Length: 113
Length: 106
Image (cartoon, rainbow over all chains, first blue to last red; front, side):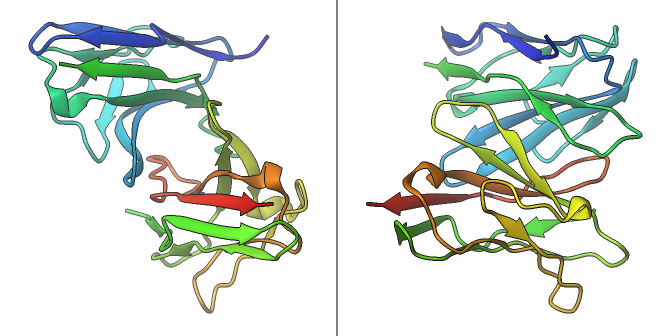
């Protein structure tokens, strides 16, 4: 089944404790991206990647890192999480030269205390 | 950067009433635009794209270049239409609008 998966789905952590949220897609998509969703603010892009080893900042990259060493994986890294990074995170992927339709993962709910 | 604006964060209508969710874009050229929908506790999914000119679940959206708009419309809203709706440009950085939460009351 073609899909985007994220792990973990739920995470509660403490300020300053490094964490990684994984994202994987099995559709051979070149493009992958991370968003955070907050009430009243909608969906804001954190980082995106147009292919392996190519990443770019979105609207809210501060406090986040990403890497794209393999085409199928695009992990989101929080080196020192803070409470303002408590949010619902979505990973998405799509083909570059297609209709731009993005396929979304199920979301990861992160709480930083 | 190509941007879209959704001016209404919340929209509430009664079942059977017409509904229009607004989306405006602020760039020139030939825009390609999407509407995505997120039902409660589900992931975002594509609702429709303007190039296909299709109707999905009774929703349509027409690109109006004069008004730079891509409003989503449905003549008779249903309770199951209650969801979060996002407008998005079809470009490389895919910056979504802020979203509109639609509530259809019985």
